Image 1 (cartoon, rainbow, N blue to C red):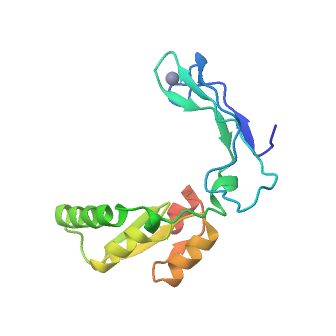
Image 2: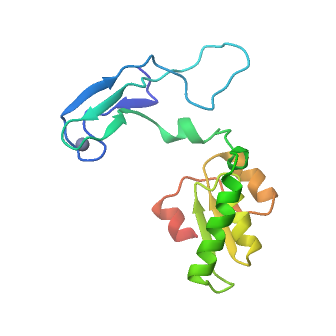
Length: 159
Ligand SMILES: [Zn+2]
């Protein structure tokens, strides 16, 4: 058993202990942990449990966030159609809220800053918060200030 994860015995949604194994999978490496040649990798249970009280289906293995996100490699811009969706979203937010030009848009889990670039292009100030160090550094270098942090109450007060 990994020290980087723990197994929940209660429902993530309602707290019930009335969970049944619904789908059993082989333990697997974290997604986006692609390696070009087979090497030993940490694997985690991926079994799906069903809560008999609220019906929520869930993976009960909780991997530490640092293990997943600090060296995260997925970038928003690589998802086909997402940039267009974000453009429509930014247009909708700006047209509905008509924020003053000095307004600050904060994106929690901002990844490569794709969404924030669109708000910046519409005259708003932007700030990204994302724990993926390399992605945050690249977003900042590309003009979207991004703090390489997990969003916490302390970070909220800092921004
Ligand atoms: Zn439940």
